[in-house]
Length: 63
Image 1 (cartoon, rainbow, N blue to C red):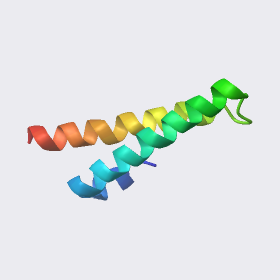
Image 2: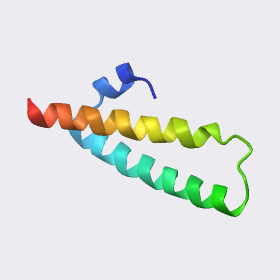
Image 3: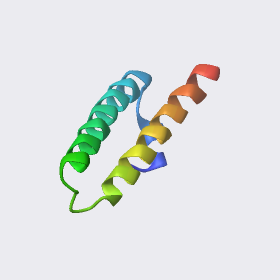
């Protein structure tokens, strides 16, 4: 998910997306611990997307 796509979402949508992404990241980490993922770079990309969404939420709260 790109930064431009994140900026278009509302606060409620961002909060929902953040919850969904955190769950997805958690599931990926558990799956990777049990047996290696085919593409371990997924972990990095999901983690960075979580950070982008969280940063946008924080930025909007401070405005």
